[in-house]
Image 1 (spheres, rainbow, N blue to C red):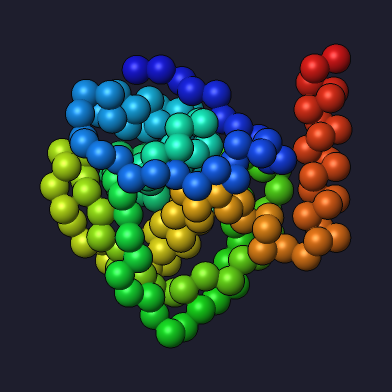
Image 2 (cartoon, rainbow, N blue to C red):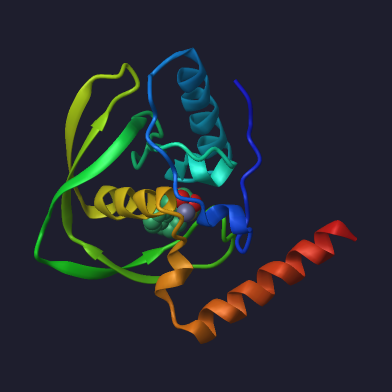
Length: 169
Ligand code: K1U
Ligand code: ZN
């Protein structure tokens, strides 16, 4: 297993649209293990392959208190969304230290392959529903700050670039 570097906003590679995983082989299983290790190490509740510069449709999630219920979604597709939507506080490992409200569907049903390549339907509500929608956005090249106003987004961009410059000094 390996810890993978996480791309930080405003890295343009975060806006790449991911392509479907063709086959769940040893390479994908290794990537799943690395994504899970990277997510747990970063204390996140989700991670998309896009965030580690791999542009294939693969996400990992664990919203459990005990951090022992990993969920792997390969080639996820939204099949149903509730008519109700609410504003939820979100964070992102690619935008460290920034939290803001984003409107999401309250409940979603998503079809995906699991880590063994078996087709499943995941019914999500609460934090899991928010996280699934956030991670699926990453696969489409969308970062949550793009839901915020241009003013907020630009402030965040400047803050991130300043932090990056200070890190490189
Ligand atoms: O995609 C990511 O960068 C992971 C992200 C997932 C996420 C968190 C919160 C709402 C939607 C999606 C994180 O894990 S951010 C860090 C975190 O653990 C967290 C932040 C806010 C609320 C709950 C958890
Ligand atoms: Zn994120």
